[in-house]
Structure formats: C-alpha cells, structure tokens
Image 1 (tube, rainbow, N blue to C red):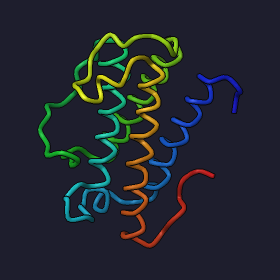
Image 2 (image 1 turned 135 degrees about the vertical axis):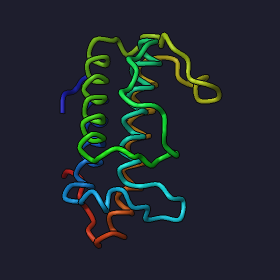
Image 3 (image 1 turned 30 degrees about the vertical axis):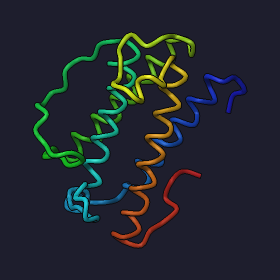
Image 4 (image 1 turned 45 degrees about the vertical axis):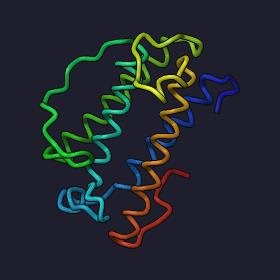
Length: 160
C-alpha cells in the first residue's frame, strides 16, 4: 500500500469491493436471486445497489452528471430482474468509472452535485465521498458475509 492519502483511500475502497465479489464467488444464479433474510433483499440486488451507489457518489455527486443506465428503475429496493452476468458487469463498470474520476480529482475538490441532507451536508469534498463509499461497501460486504454463511456455512471469504 502506498504511503500517500489518496492511494491509501483507494486501496481500502478496492479491498472492500474485492470482498463483495469474493463473498459471492461460486454462487449460482438461483442463490444470488433468492432472499435469505426477512427483509427480502437478494445478494444480486445488493451488488446492483452497490453499483448504483458507485455511480451516484462518483458520477452524479463528484462530477455532477452521469450517463443513464441501460434499464428503467423497475425493481424493488435491493432486488433485481437482471442476470448475474449483467449485474456483475454493471458493478465492475461503475467501479472502473469511479476509479477514473477518483484518479482525476483532487481530494479537496468540492462536489459538483448534491446529495440530499443530512448526509449531503456532511460531504464537502472527494475525501468525504470516498470515505462514505468505503463505509457503504464495507457495511454491505458484512451483510453479504452473513448471508453467505446462512446459505452454505462458508465464512472468511474476503481477500486476505
């Protein structure tokens, strides 16, 4: 891990993203689209949610604009009618685009877009955006870790 702040933040964000993918690795489409907890979200829906979060925070908030997604907002929260291949490709593409924006933007840059209050009031620069995305991704990786344990008993699947 590099010593400067920007590289350190990116390292931690990428580690959490790798955890999300590692936790779900090897699960079939049927398992990825089946709710495990009473709240009804699915593992695949969570990955799509994380893709939308990457898109929202880095494109809509940091740059003030985002290309439209290839589908309508046609699903219940944290579920998806799309295939695992489509959702994982969407997530990876949003992460790639986020990394490009992060690389091209100073940590002190003021966002061009605005997230609603109260969180929007707390995010003053790119540093705040990336810290929020580390927290958001880690939080949901933890949810996915618990769900994976309930599915097949496997634990500790994130990168070492």
